[in-house]
Image (cartoon, rainbow, N blue to C red; front, side, top):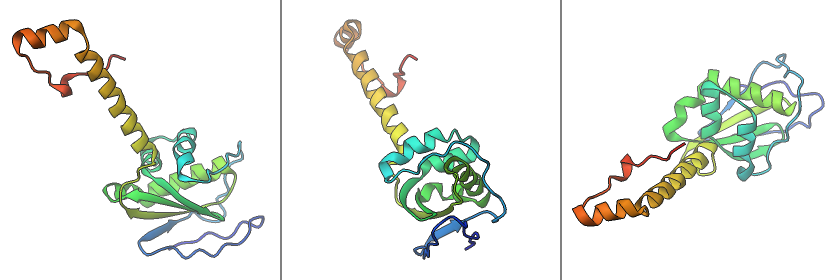
Length: 168
């Protein structure tokens, strides 16, 4: 476990990560670049939109999208990461995410990852639900077409749902 030197303007926080928690930080002299400060969300519901606003790319974007905000205590952000995506918590990727968070918030933060169950409020989970809802609407619209209903009745046809794609 590595820790960064406390920010002189920040209130010191003693955080004892739970077992299975991995805390990542960057060197104390790596100050975030000045920019518009975003406020960290107070709960898990605000995390997906916060992550989307970061405009990340590559593996850091994947890491952020798969995480769920568990809590913010002082300068420590605890993120839940599904076990299936634990490879994303690699130091290189988490350092990029941390740098983006530092820059976006104007604070020096520490990241703690809890690897475990599914992150249901993550950006990726939200996007999966939206795609599934869109697919269901597309399938329903297809089945409601008079021509499709006629073909199904006349020829005892069957529809393969996986072949129905929404038109962009």
